[in-house]
Amino acid sequence: MLRLSPGLPTRLAQDRVIALVSATNGKSAITTMIGAALRAEGRTVASNIGGANMMPGLVTALAAAPDAQYGILETDEAVVPRALRELAPTVIVVGELSRDQLDRHHEVRKVAALWRSAFVGTSAQFVAPVNDPNVVWALEGQAVDWVELETSAKLDSVACPKCASVLRRTGEPSGWSCACGLESPRPHAVQRGDSLQVGDWRAAGPTVLPGRWQQSNRALAVVASTHLDVSLDRAFEAASTVARVGRRIDTMPITSGRAARLVLVKNPAGWAALIDDLGAGEATLVFVQNDESADGRDPSWLWDVPYERLARRPFVASGTRALDVAVRLRTAGLELVAVEPDPLRALAIAGARSGGDVVVAASYTAYHDIVRRIGRR
Amino acid sequence: MTDSVMRIGALYPDLLGTYGDRGNAAVLAERLRVRGIPVEVVTVLADDAVPASLDCYVIGGGEDHAQTAAAQRLIGSPLVAAYEAGASIVGVCAGFQLLGRTLPGADGIVLDGLGIIDATTVVGATRQVGDVVLEATDPSLGELSGFENHRGVTEVHDDLPPLGHVLHGGVREGVLTDRMLATYLHGPVLVRNPALADRVLSWTTGPLAPIADDIAVELNHALVTRFGNRRSTWLRARRRARA
Image 1 (tube, rainbow over the protein chains, first blue to last red):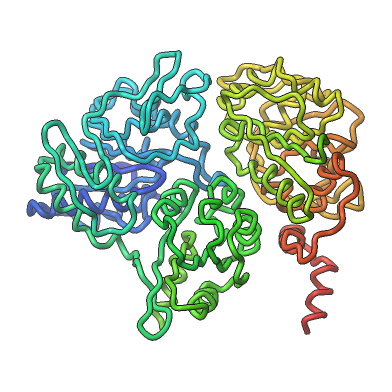
Image 2 (cartoon, rainbow over the protein chains, first blue to last red):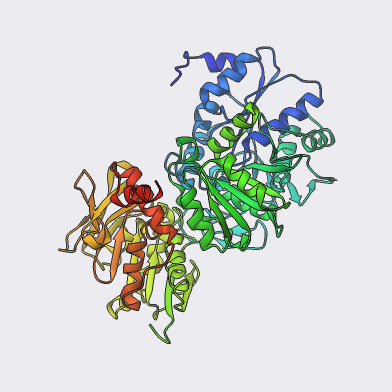
């Protein structure tokens, strides 16, 4: 592991405005959107899009743009305490926490506990969703602009993080409370579908980035941008028109002009959002699940995803854990076309089936492997 | 089994579903459905009462706070009486710990368990994380694959047969009796080990015929081969057949 010279992060962060962005999902998109809002105002930004979100990645991004006025940094959940200590951020955007690669990450409540103790005494301004009891508990007593998001994972917030009682849900989508007094805060901003309301200000419209979850990411990014002196109108416009996050791509060629949609999906919350997005369409699914360290060694979480909602849809199981995928999706009622560990061959099988659409959902290393191999063709 | 329908209770998947263990009840039901045997999965959520009349109760793993909430609900529930009356139980990770006498709860407290097994759990020095292959105590179950991710260390004081011993290490793992499976293995364990799933079902249904083209058998062999550090005779036979 890269050893950083003591004091280097602090020196690099000095004399500029730092914002940290952390969550289980959406870090890269939110970070990109805030950067776009600042650049739309003509300001210069250092940022670390693309997954380099441990401390060396943050420092490298700051060092690579020494004259940038702003450092907008996506930050791994476990790195937040150190980044807070050494970079003295002005704004911290905290998205929802949900289970993710439990072989190497902490359980959700442990992440929340880590944050809660790290946040004691900070003067940073937070932006966070009211939906997530773990996040609300972690931010008790802090200055927070609370955002009510339309959709929420809920999977890891049944027991109260404060007292271990079972939480009461008090109205959809976001209301919840506990006998111990912990409850969903009153929101400063509300996202419903493609609209966002902040006080008397309201705007609506699609995001260029595909996926309904981008509307939640945009809501958090826009509210955060206002704390960096960007107007709501400018921030909403800039976040809406972000077309690409880092080196990620949205489509990949199949044959003769046809293209498949390519989606990076890493965990149950990501899958729940993708299933919402896929809806009742007929597209063949190519599901590529690897088990490298970055993917998580344990794909047990496949059973936490409601794949039953995709019943009867054809799928090709791929990746190093193709058989785990095959058993899971077949049990959920999907139609197994083939088990093919190689993702490009799996895509060819799906593409040869019919003229219908193909959606490739890939885990972290599978996604980057596919992008690299397409680039070489 | 009443009216020839096997009723499987998935207990608190909202509290004890952190590690995919809800797949155990799902795959038990699926393995009956493909054989044409009627089955009903009764999902018992945190606010629901535990039914007394189910054939099999399945409990999974979860975080300390959720486990504490689950323990508070299970103590005094009809689960112990149902077990004593002949129902079967599958407990995984936190579910295993809850079957014992005491276990660690949230914020360092010691919780009472159900006392179905004379076992005690304490917090270990380090977290055990990774793929495991067991040699099953019952040789007809072959080698078993799972993923462990826990800090609890459970000592079984009863003279109950272990589920198996870790390959190459010899450490005992879990408990398997004629009506109870308790283990730390996720995966989910009954997905990765179809012979074990069928054993659990057979406690209620009696002997079951094999499933044709059982992809779960292929999964079991692939994982046992990969993580057991030696090639299975099954896979070698398949390769020869293809060659």
